[in-house]
Image (cartoon, rainbow, N blue to C red):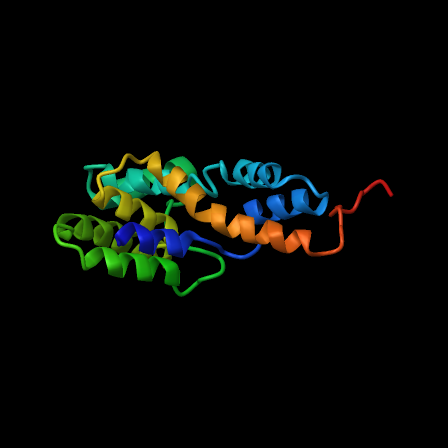
Length: 183
């Protein structure tokens, strides 16, 4: 049930980088597998589909939360799993997933760790947990490896990407093109 909640929360999120990549491929009438491959390529980086992996490192690190957050800020300039430009008051997807997680037995220690890290980040920057931290927490609770974060993200988004590709196929071929600064 918990994994279903997470997959549902990750299913689609509008015109993200991976969705745009898949839709651009579909606009050229590429095959469905190629469109999905374009989407997967766009989500492969640490700022998109692999973001839960970095967030998981915060939870797995045994140092005090203040030290873990400080190290992330020094290393990356931000704390993975926190803040989302669309949700300055908090990511509602994270709220739903974390609420479902905390209903599960045996999550008290994980909940304490998430709360400690979240408190330090909020005190420092005002940022709140996003879906990447929620994903990392669920995968930790299910005792799945950190690398599963990217796989779970891709599985969930496959449905959303497929829907976007089908929708793009129904449109007039557009062949998206950016402006060329030389013309």
